[in-house]
Amino acid sequence: MTRIAFIGGGNMARSLIGGLLKTGVAASSITVAEPRAEARQELGRDFGIASYAENRLAAAEADVLVLAVKPQIMPAIHAELQDMLVRQRPLLISIAAGVRIDQLERWFGHALAIVRCMPNTPALIGAGATGLFANRRVSPEQRAKAQHIMDAVGITRWVEDEALIDTVTGLSGSGPAYFFAMVEALEDAAFAQGMSRETARALAAQTCLGAGRMLVESGEDPGVLRQRVTSPNGTTQAALESFAADHLAQIVTRAVAAASRRAGELAAALDHQS
Image 1 (cartoon, helix red, strand yellow):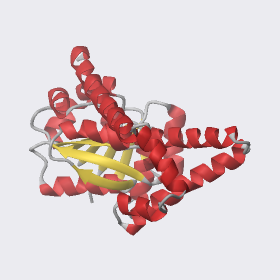
Image 2 (tube, helix red, strand yellow):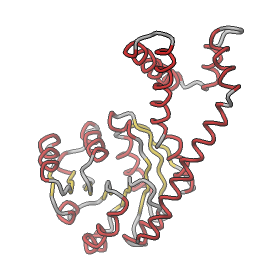
Image 3 (tube, one colour):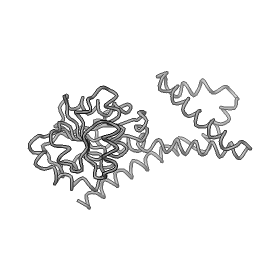
Image 4 (cartoon, rainbow, N blue to C red):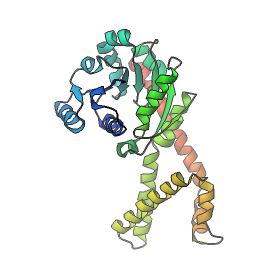
């Protein structure tokens, strides 16, 4: 039985713990460290797992250590867990945004197997999309363990170049906000034409949900699905021509690039703090 310890009991950790329990992982194999007393009590009550105020107690017997804390806290965690890391050499899984593998190796030790993950907020409802990258010390078995943990809250995809984790950040990590912005714009457009906001929001949100499900469940190319909705000289074609005139593809390309670039800048800023 793999023993999994979470350092940090925030929303993403809660999502992963809940997802793992649904897949059949035993509550007795999961521990969590969380400094806030109320949050610790909730974790124990909601999931039936052992929760601790001290990181070293939660991690004492761990085979897998999931780092679910803010990036700036990482160096301090190593100081507290140093003895355990040397003795047990657990697999480290980091879900901290913008923290590179070389930074994790510098803080926690170059001899450790480390997987860097970039999940997104739909993981909170079990519909996440996560990119993963492993350092050279991660074994096939450990790779499978990391994927099983992240699969508990959605889909996973491995990248073989760590730089692509920044692309994952710009694509799926920040992506939910792009769709929320689209729904806001659709709502505003319909409201401007006289529709109530409640009706406009409901129709826009359900349209995004339905289109997303069609894309995922059909397995077809998005371009094919788009063409099926687009009748020659019809309403959809008129809208798509308007998008093209405003250079939608270039707008999206620049937005993803901006988010990816910012992810790299945040990681570089940590070099000056550590």
